[in-house]
Image (cartoon, rainbow, N blue to C red; front, side):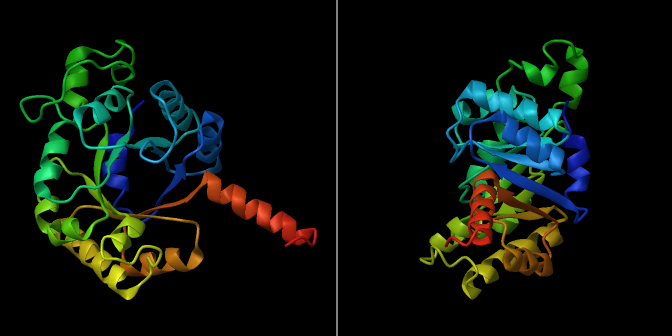
Length: 255
């Protein structure tokens, strides 16, 4: 059910590709998984998912052969606990500003004594089919914990964030990163790319995978590949609908 242990290694391979899902229908997630995405980024921060619908997306990603990564809406216990019980393969935590926030939210992902996670697994323990002792031994490694770096404050504290043992990877969010320095809408600005490069270099030095979350734009993909990211989360259901519609309109002569 969980692909966390596998992805803890694979994220550094340079070949992992993720895709984003914002729309409610779990069939979209299953389809993208079957198309070949390695993980599906189910966006509970900006998407309109309720708890039941989110669970269906997690199940759909796994049914399609992909890992289920969920970006949670916040950093509080109530934002994370129910998601962890769904047996996800990865959790993405947004808007972390420094190592203090990072440590606190990572502790919420882990059981005592290492963390403060409350006990109540459901799908995470295969609906009680998995042996409890085995589950507890494997729970830490069963999913990857990813901090999203999307503010200049986090970039300024990136070495301290990367030093946290419970952290598995970081992923750059160029849009909010650009906004944090007054350049929203200009995510390929030299100043934004310099901050992103600082994150990439620090992650390489720390030996932890670093990725980027971007849209399906070839120029942006090439830039970040050349900058040295280990993995990319690229493209989403809404963008694919938009691009496909525009191509169709062009083919029939409509602008």
